[in-house]
Length: 95
Image (cartoon, rainbow, N blue to C red; front, side):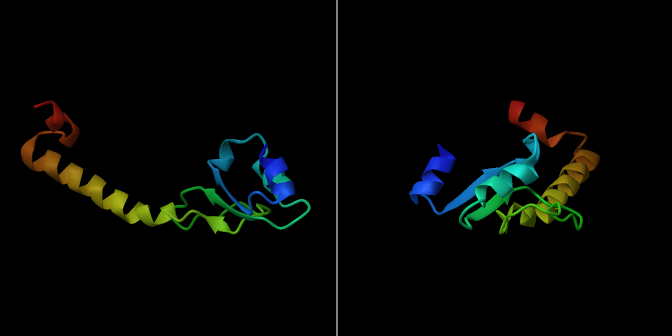
């Protein structure tokens, strides 16, 4: 259905979630761009200088990689909390 909508112009852009879970993400992204360039972004959180794989025909990512520093900070806060109190933060929801 997605390809039909692209061919008829019903949609002009796509977000592809977790493309690295596809059998061949590079080939799938190329098929989306086959006849007419389509605006395609992928949901792939890049971390630590990671780049999108070569050959992926996409405008880029959805931008979730900006969460990475926040996730590191939350992890640090959880470890600090556990060291200071002896509690695991997730166990407090049960109290």
